[in-house]
Length: 380
Image (tube, rainbow, N blue to C red; front, side):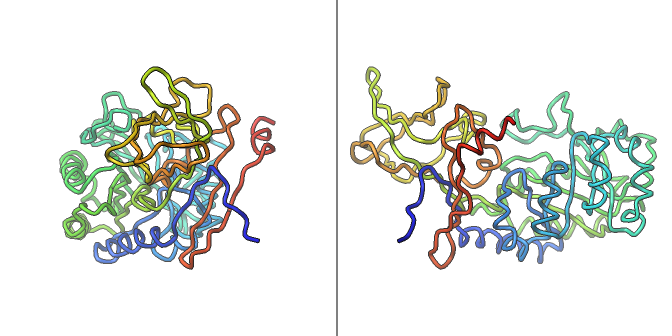
């Protein structure tokens, strides 16, 4: 007897993931660049064997992500963190192919240790600096690395007269869910402030970071491909890197939930679900982000979709449905693969969603279910 799928659950479609990967691989091949998965957006490592057929590896935000990429994909590992703890450097040198620094002080602190490492000496490990072009293009201040007082990246004035020996990569990351025009204008700012470094014999690689919505239907991929080839030729680069996360997993996953109760407060009909915005889809509260609900309609009876935690603001939003909801109904949230599983919590001890892979042959594989023991073990 086939086991019933649990609620709540994330479901990730392998077919939809592969469709995104095919678009990215086409950009990589025709744009003469390298593309890696940003694990901060999507790190469902069960899919890494598929991703590795199309992309060049992963980028990592520190030791644990670097270990995951090294163990489960085994290709390039591009590591960057706003700051490294000294005890992580030896292992990062062992498993990273690129190790980028956020400040000259951190590079100076670890430089002698790194350049003496056998993998650095053999050329298997390269080092870089994250730069801040001070060019804001995004609409959400929370996600703007170029905002005034930002801790992310080194500004041009800080690099004046700096000794960049040992550094071969410049790295910037300024975008969030943005298109080609914003990348192009950012590159103009990089040229103005850092072009002399890119033209030097020292810098041989450029990392354009993430935040590129490369797989959105209206993204100007043809313009990007021309741009990438021009950039590589202009600066005589050995490698040009892109680090999309959301673009890999966008529109590949859903979050399936169940209506636990229906209550009324004044004129508001409220459906309480078995999923939590703060626990399972935090961008709903942080961004804010409004996910699509597959069962909703433009007209009908409106319900506020609420969550089972004690946080008063743990509310997903108001949606209309073509018929009255009832206890036990399924509510399915679209586009729930990226920035969901990587950010979830066990706040209030709410049942954590299972993780299911929807394979191309129609089989649905439960790759992870969470238990009380998982909740308890987090704190000892």
